[in-house]
Length: 392
Image 1 (cartoon, one colour):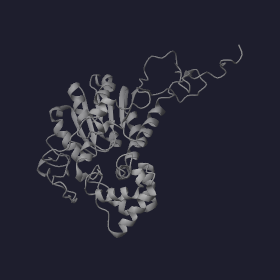
Image 2 (tube, one colour):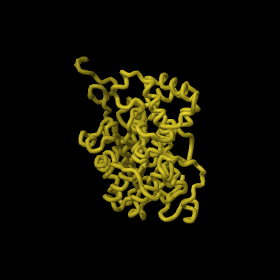
Image 3 (cartoon, one colour):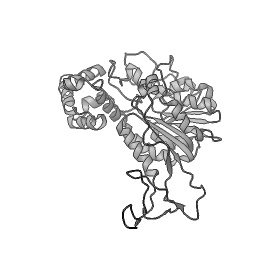
Image 4 (cartoon, helix red, strand yellow):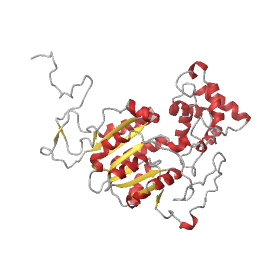
C-alpha cells in the first residue's frame, strides 16, 4: 500500500519516478510506459470511462456529502469518473481514492489534478482501507462508493488480458506488479481445481468440458494468449449452448479474473471493516455485476440492518439494535435509459445503506423494536398474539 502524492513519488525521489524496479516483462501488444513506481508519469493517457449510475449514486450519497468536512472514500477509483463528479459538486469534500491498479491511479491522478489539495490517492486493495485511513489520520469516513468488477481501462486495453474479444497476453492482474497471472492459473492448476473455479466463480455449466479442452492443449504447448483460450472455450461448449447468452468465453474469463485477483475474498474482508469505519449518518453504496458479488454485499448489509436482541422482546435492548438502515429495496437495477446510454450498466445491481446514529434520542433506556417485514407483507407479531380467525 502507498499514498500517491502529487508531484512526488511514494518511497523515492522525483529523480527515479520513471524507473521500473520490478524487472517485469512488458508485452508488445501496446508500447507504453509501465506504472512501476508510485506517481510515475504515464505519458499518453488511455482508456475511456462512462461512470455507471452516476446520478443515482450521487443522489443516495448526497446527505452524507453535504456534511461539513465530509470524507468520501472511492474504494474502486478506476479512471476517476465518480470521484470527479463528487469533487466538482461538493467543494468541501475530501476524497480518499483506492485502487490496486497503478496505471488506473496514474490516470485518476491526472484527471483529478485540479482537486489535489483535497485528494488522497492510495495504491491499495479496498480491504486495506483501515491502514489507509490510519496513515492519513482519518478516524472515519462519511460517504463511500464501491464499483466492483473490472474497470474500463482494464477491459478496453487489449494488453491487460481481460477481454476475450481481443488478442493479448493472458494476464488479468489488476495490479500487474504482483501475483500469478491467468496464464499461470490455466497452465499450472490441477484439472479438478480449474473445474471448481469455473463452476463457482463463472457459473459455467460446461466447466468439465472446458477444462478437458484446456488440459489437452496445454499438454501440447503452453496457453499464453486470450484468443487461444477463447477459442478453446468456444469449441468445448455445445453448439446449441453457443447460440444464446453472448460470447461463450465470458464465464470462463470472469472466473479466471476473480481467481487471479482474489476478488471475492477481498470483498468479504473489505465490507465489515468499511462499515465499522462509516461515521454515524454516513452512507455507503455498492454496485456489483454478478450474483456472487451481490450475494456477499446483500449478506453484509442485511446482518447489520437487523436486531441481534431476543426476538420476543417488544423493545430493543441497548447495543442490540440494527446499525444500518437500508436505502434500497433489495438491489436496484439500471433504468432502460441508463443501459441505452451506457451498455456496461446492463448487469449492475446497486445496494445502499446508512449508518444509524446510536446517539439519536430513544424512549427511556431502550428503543421500541421496529416491526420487521415478513412474507405476505405483515409486520412481525408478538408471541401469543391472536391471528385472524383464532378466537375473539
